[in-house]
Length: 334
Length: 224
Image (cartoon, rainbow over all chains, first blue to last red; front, side, top):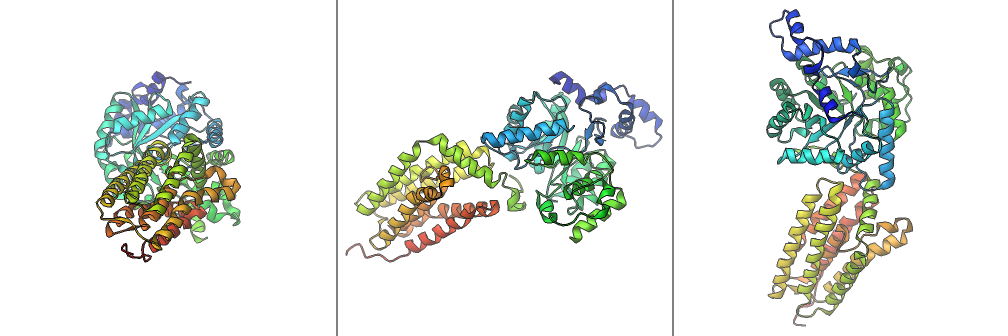
């Protein structure tokens, strides 16, 4: 189990890792080479080095992506909790959620994402983590979603999870982001938070998301909706995130099950095997996680077999750009 | 929350129909045996509506105000808020309705309103009885859903339906101030069930239409 000190050490990796950032900077002759770009370059070296801090919860086959601002690697498939974990006090449903979380960690998953908007989901995750002994590999991604006292809400959220601090806190749907950004920056500076993010979904407020990413260096993560049907982010946000060294979390990979329901019963194309997919769900998820700008997709589910199927997507062959276009075109034609 | 209205309605509901049913069951179990007292209160209001004495309308309306306050606090603020972020806002709306009902009760005391005569009141009494006991009987008839029994004064749907029936039993234009929030709630309930895929979606609009028709039914003049 990772304690508070160890967790903080992990998230403050840039200060502790043995890579000489300044040396990295010196080795690049470009005029506009900032600290984040240096870290992005260092991340590549770290990824190849197999340092001890990367050893925990590694599943050899799982594709990982680097968080540009620190170099930490994350499995490219995470776990969302919208609707699925909001089970109130139903003991049977709660047990089922715990099994889902157990399967997620057993399969090498790390990032669990939640929000104060998700009803009892935070408490459900807290129960699951407690029953699993707070797995070391957890990467906790939460949100602040209030126009009033953000620190109070974050503390309440933390008590639901039962963790000493969060790896990532995102400003949910940009609600009061001007107020929350300084708060999160303060928390990060004080070592009480690993990363700062902003979120949107359903393709809303992309212009504002772009502006915030472009103008604020504090942003480590952006969470957006992206799938084979909702591809607006490919035009600006994903390239901008790559350019600015911002990690990308993808929500609604299946459009809340709408896409998988729509494709149910239709024959999987022969060429799906080229992408390493054996089901529509896998093909949809492979489309997302194979985009080079995507750090982690967070499908939510109530089923253990679906968690395993999702995690299986993070290994094996990945579609290249040409195949990705073919997937999107095919699904949009159906 | 900011901009939430821009999202498709199905994407602001953070729970499934299964979880909603499960929530109703656990709430019902948590508040037992308050259901018995609530049904008794409903019976008293029916008796007052039939008797229609000088103060009976005001007393009935005050009973209803207490019911809306109870639902605001017990159902929304204490329980529903666990699974739905909008519950505190609903609690405020139900508390406001309680205040409106108190105002209506005062209006009844001052003679600006009161129970209407038959046949309107008779029609309304039937509707009120259905709202209070109909939900219980329906749950009993559908044995597999028996634990989901929604009771007037403790659950929002029968409370809103009963209130509309009580409004229908009154006379005077001022009674309509107590109808707006129940109608609004019935619309919200219908939308929520329609999104979740519950067959109950049709019930609230149906109850609303019948109650409005009842409220517009003719009455004999009070001098007769």
